[in-house]
Image (cartoon, rainbow, N blue to C red):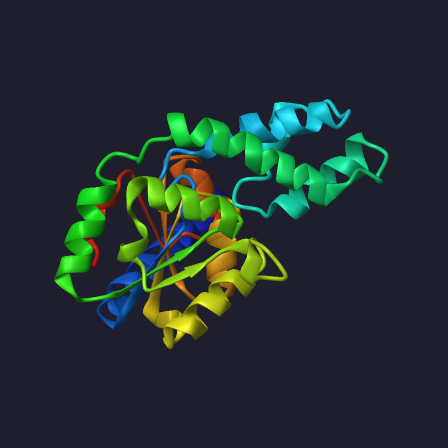
Length: 241
């Protein structure tokens, strides 16, 4: 009983410390950095469908459960892992990536939708003039440009970082370190909005404040990954920033 109480008390202290840390530093936020897939657009199911189909067409049957660990990661990392585990290890990764992007765009340009409230939130945030706005995505530029154009989103963001700009992808901190450097801001002055555990880990490792959004993963999983706060929809951010 005593051990349980001590464990519970310790968890409460850690929880309060995180909440107070966010509250104390929130006034120092100068930039808000958005992930794209699963935060701005409801694209994760389409990505998974295109990636699974690509694997099949290159001779690999991969269990869909594997995609729980792939969220937010670069295609190079996904297909390299799949090739080693389910293929020969010699599959042409770049050709797989090109095929996947073609499949994804053929579906996304007709089926993809913005997540609810995204356009209104981005418009209001931009009009407020309070924060720099940036986008950091694991997708390739050729893919993301077409989706940004489809929804007329590019003008919201001062900086757009894709996997083409990074040698290492999420959960490595490099994508967010590159973004904050291009913004000219310190990581601790940047709030990152992410839907995946890999994205949260990446942003935290870069030194940013992090906000998880439960479009893809549960609140519990996002907090375990290190999210400072977790929201269900973007307009809840107005109670934080």
